[in-house]
Length: 377
Ligand code: ACO
Image 1: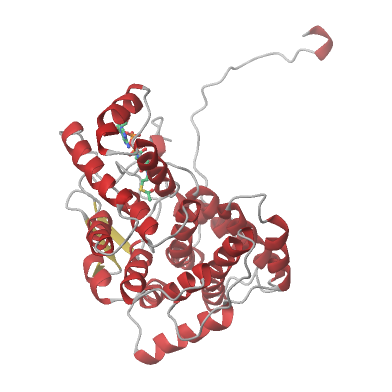
Image 2: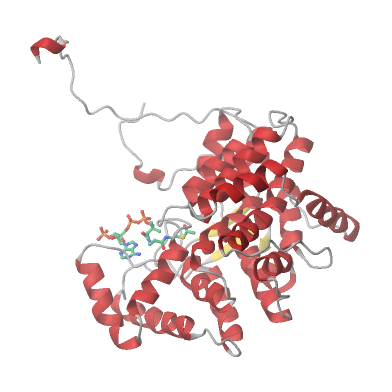
């Protein structure tokens, strides 16, 4: 038994996967053999979902069938609708998403069926309901009627439609769909790992996804996109960047959206999101945050020169979502709305070749202590 500790499990392979490969030095991200730049340029979120669940791109008929499944699964149960109505205004949307997943699991009589076909059905169901949950939650908290989904819009465009009650233009549709593609999968990140740990006990997919959502929420992981928004908002204008960042680092805090366990160069997803940001900014009335993010990025490149700290996916997703008119507390739930595909794809692999995840901890506590009765303590 090793006496060393892999803090944060850095550099440890916990499993093998056919889903995703990252080269953190070159800045490469590959989904099942396809480069992320290629997918962002040419694919759609639904195609990427199929790719992750089947390890190959779909035929036209297979893609149509997946889209039909997503349409048929996206309506909420009465219970889930009622739960949302009850909790709206009291909790944040990420928690609402977690509750919706748990409620869906509680109502699914087949939840403990861990066969591949049933698990794929569950994966599609969870992917389909997440946009409905978030859009409905957002409408209800504004005192607005939920907007019914539209069959003629793709998965991403339909979410923006249900959220805002306005059909997104072609650029908005494309940008948001690409953002969904970029967030879909990322090898053995913290939330995927927590999903695997849960599944490795042969608990069901709903509970595994609820674990993943709880893990994604933290600001060192998916919660960083909202934290980036708050940082840029707090900085406010270009002349405050240096003083704000200096003070933050002096307090021992981190600059959100910067740094990554695996990438020691700019995250390729940040490169793509920055490019999309420039396209959106041409016509957006809300480009201030994007412009300030660019200035912040340039300042940090000078300030942190020589350190392996570069923008990650969350750095530009915040200002891109801002330009799409999305409120900041939905940024992390939207991350989950995309990553559900990667999480469930890893769960398919895990259930197909399961072994309980049960590491050790090195004991450093006291030893040989005689028990003292409470009256003598
Ligand atoms: N700002 C300032 N310093 C940083 C940052 C940062 N964002 N990130 C790392 N560092 C410094 C640490 O202080 C540490 O310095 P030291 O060696 O002098 O003590 C060094 O870099 C290494 O940091 P670790 O925490 O050991 O690196 P780790 O791999 O554990 O952390 C993490 C990765 C959590 C992403 C980190 O870079 C961070 O906190 N970033 C900000 C939060 C963020 O953007 N998270 C999203 C990541 S992408 C995603 O999950 C979707």
